[in-house]
Length: 471
Image (cartoon, rainbow, N blue to C red):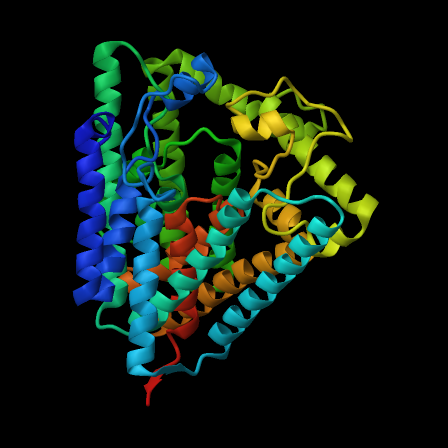
């Protein structure tokens, strides 16, 4: 798929994917959701040489890349169009079946979503009145996230009680990790033969890292456990600092489960899994040092951030400074004008570096050409900065609260499963995955599949103990 996307065949395949999802939704909403999640996860978003092309040509000579995520129709990516169509079918099905939901938590989620939407509309209005009128393109872009959250939640309401839905979700995630992991292995082999290592592997760290812990803890056979954990690590390869930090948080979360779930089998498997992960990770780092010394040096450079963070030394990394300066300018402007502290700057809200100046020489690898030309930056690199910029403390608090809700509900369901089943059941695996996946959702970013999957899994957890009543 990676290489086909460099040709016109990628365009044809991308539209074929969309067609298959749309046609399947006419017969089965569940099937269309499964196909969308699977195809979105295994399809690369960018070419492996995308960053190199952008930087070297100042975004002027970037080769076309036709994938399910990058191909657009009427200004919308095909993956977003697929979500919208799933949403349309979900609404039609809800109206036809006259479905009611008894889950108060799910109703609270929707009420909270409506409230946050109203807050952002208010903030947008205030920003326009004081002369900070946002670009309509960015308003639509920010609004898209709410649409996807709502559609993911609606789809979950309709299919969460379907037969074997937990097993089906697990199998989709499992298959996607196998595809991505084997593809990464192919990239390694191809780069080694060609003698041109490339750090872009089109992985899915937010899915694969949680599943790596799931496999390491919940697969009965030791050989299969080692094999699948290794494949998941291949599917997760990422040298982003936030991803490394989230992995450490996952380790802390595992210790939390060891202490508070109080299950002997879980405790034994979790400790064994952590030791196994240390061995596998050490081997992977050693292999990286042999395979690509430059990549190994780059990894050490990334880890230097954490040593400086612990020691209190001044950060020298340009990407870290950009994030820190973004936060300083967003908070500084908010404090100066008061209202953004609470409700943000609304849909399409932007910031600039007028308070601190530029941390480094900014280029197209940092922001879009339009942002650099207008000095209006609409997408901070950190998702928490993004939430505060758009909706202030209200939006940020709401989002963090639903992440905590996702973790707490996953924990409760894991504890309930352990009373009747073992940690080797798919039900426990999915709840453990949701528990760890919620950590990565703190920095979700704007990939449609993760926006959809987050709300889908959240509502799935909220309604698993409730029933849908059809009138």
